[in-house]
Image (cartoon, rainbow, N blue to C red; front, side):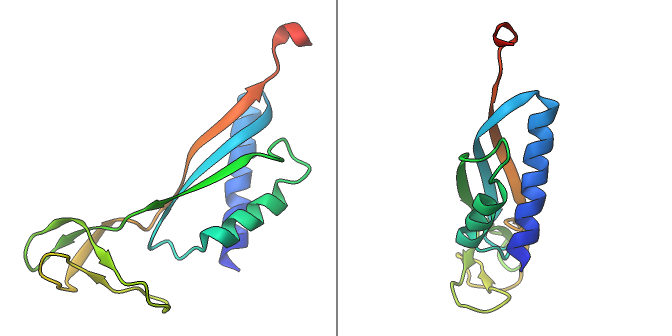
Length: 127
């Protein structure tokens, strides 16, 4: 299950960042997922919600943002958002929206990135 290992990696990075910043609570986690990352956002969110139990990230708001596929067409030199088919197969087809060629270079849309982590820190006066 690809989503589980990805969720564990994301959580590790979130908790490490929170610890480095002396956080006592993680309130929001924003994750960007490229449409070619081959991850199911609902499954990833479910796995994260399970894994964050009993951590300082418990009850954090998890936001998933989709990242479009950006291409450069070898056929017509179009550069921009590519058309990605929604068929249910392992490797989606990417077309140039201008000339419908499959001869494209993918520039963006494969990555998974933690865009933002919001934390709360305990005030020194409260200690």
